[in-house]
Image (tube, rainbow, N blue to C red; front, side):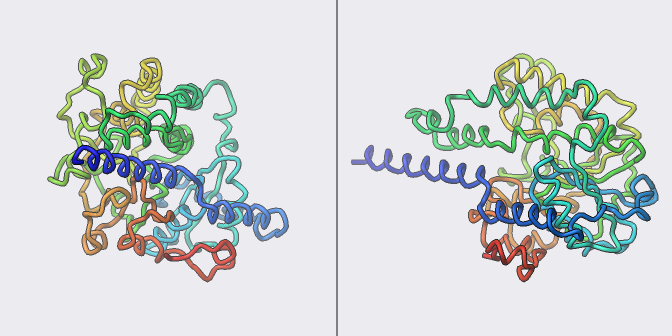
Length: 393
């Protein structure tokens, strides 16, 4: 009887992880509706096709006296929250330039949204990847790597059904394998950040923002931080006792049982966070960071994803090794999308909060007590939001 109950408990836990995987990997019909309605608006409404930014503000796009932020996203609703929270909380919105990079299919909906919802006096630029000249010329290593990675992942462990059918592994191991199949880990929107020096050849510094963050304070002081010649300003994630968020080292992300990893890196090296990063592009251009990144992605693909399984952070840890400057944890609080230990009071006291993890704030599986920190920047009376039945809860 005990063995029977243990088996039922295990089966229920695995089913929970499978449902969460499906929920986090799918596009909610409300977001799909929003993209379709905005695409239709772009085709029928001239005001939704306005040049972003207008001609008089184009010089600001390469003016280093402005505060330049970069957001790469194919999620219009998420991008709108990042943009709104950034502009509403800045002390000098007239000096803010937000560069939004998206893919071809999302470009028209994204342009329509920000044409019809301007955040003046801030300057918003919306560009698709195919608008960048260098991306259309010759071979682009990150794009080639993503194509190969997609082929490998399509056969990875036989898919979700094979993973769930495993009768010997622990539920948490199965959950990790399911997470490795998530399409976001093969998204160009995640990997394109490694090409910021080429994307913005005239800028000397940018702040990168993930599309699942919320800005809660003025970020202009980030430009006053002296990074001592380092390329990447980031919050370290090995400085706390919280096993879920702030106790991450290289061994948390890289497979040190593989000799290629074990012979080149220290498992106790402190990890850092992607999601709110200061990038000194001038310093970056003097390094071979991008080449190292591409090299290790290729090595991981050759090894059948055995060096690491998930995302852009592991190759980022390798590529920016020795080039990262630790900034104050106030600027980036992590983990709001995969654990409930963060209190609302603690989250409200952070400069930037990050819903990294499966429980994104635009999904039904979001943690209800934390979701209002994100929904406060959504105008639920907007005709597009109402028309697609996007609600606060």
